[in-house]
Each structure stands twice: as structure tokens, then as C-alpha cells.
Image 1 (cartoon, rainbow, N blue to C red):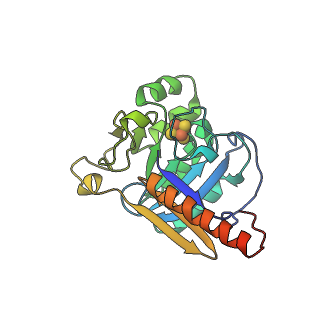
Image 2 (image 1 turned 30 degrees about the vertical axis):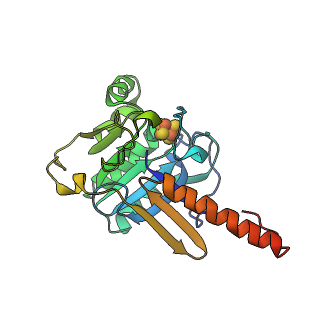
Length: 237
Ligand code: SF4
């Protein structure tokens, strides 16, 4: 699953707080947003990482997004407006597990698709599991129906791969669920990439693969802490 990490609090967006699972009343429990990224699917995309995942893949690159704890409560309609105003090709849903907030994300997916954008989802469930889930879950059914691209399956650290774009382990599959994209699009075989943004003192890192970048980031943080300790300064990061 694609990763995102910040070195300081995300820039504030609407409605901090929210429900633990975030899937009631079409309000999403959002862990992070990157409004314009080229590292989370084809073209420039509005990427949303949701909070909470029922799985515990060893080596998960977003462990801080696994607990179903409140992060940022953002109405689906707000996400639709923000995504459509961002001038992007589509939206990408990551996490966390997008299908754990299927109803709210279905509304977002349907809303942006109605305005010409595409939808890509990174899920820990396999497509077969999602189709089974969709039989008894209207939200999952709607979300699956509104998905153009799906990267499916758990992350398996023992099968890690760096050569398939946007895919973390060899068991995962990129499914083309609509006619909006085709496998011969050269963007699907281009190299993976990592993006770093520094804005207002906040460093945002996203993309794949991130393990190397995360280690370098951790090293930089530790170096900063050591420097602060030597200067007798307090740091809260
Ligand atoms: S499904 Fe994705 S987010 Fe959930 S534990 Fe596995 S890698 Fe992490």
C-alpha cells in the first residue's frame, strides 16, 4: 500500500474530530490528504488516506493509520469539491483501508466521477473478497462500481517488489475495472517515485517505495533531536 508520512501536523482542513470509524453520515475519517500528487496513480491525483484498517500486514508502511481512532472528520461533499477544484485527473483512496469507510468513499467516488475524474483505490482486500463483501454491503458495492483502478491484496513483506509501479508486493494485482484506462498506457510501467514537499515548515513525503526515504527521514529527525538536546532546547516531535 502506498505510504505517506509527515514530520509535523497536517495543515488544518475542515472539521477536526469525527467518528471513530468515520463511515456514518457520509463523513470520512481522514488521516491525510495530498491535493496534487503524481506518485499515487496515473496523472496528477487528489490522494486521500483514510484512518483505520482491520488488517495487520507485517511491514505495513502506514502503521499510524491502522487504528480506528478519530483523525479529521471531513464530509464527503467537501472532499468532492476539493478534489474537483484541484485540477486533477482523478482521486486515489489509500489508507488505512478504504473499504472500511466504503459508504462515504462511494459518495466521493460517485461525485467526482460525475464530474469527469477517475477513481483509483489501494485496498488490502482482494478483488474476490471485495466482490463477496459487496453482496451484503451496499456501500462496498457502490464503491466497487465507481472504481476505475484497484490495487488489491495484503502487503506481503516477503514478496516485496520495487519494479511494479504503485504495487508493494508481488501478490498484489492492478485491476482495470472500467474502460477509462488500458494496460498499454505507458504510465503503468514507468518507474515508481517518491515526492517530498516542504510547505510552512511541514515536510510531507509520499509515494512508493518509501522504506528508504522513511529511514532517512527518521535519521534526520534523530539528528535534529540530538542537536536540540545539545542546545538545551525542548522538542515535541
Ligand atoms: S492492508 Fe494496507 S494499510 Fe492495512 S495493514 Fe495491510 S498494508 Fe497496512
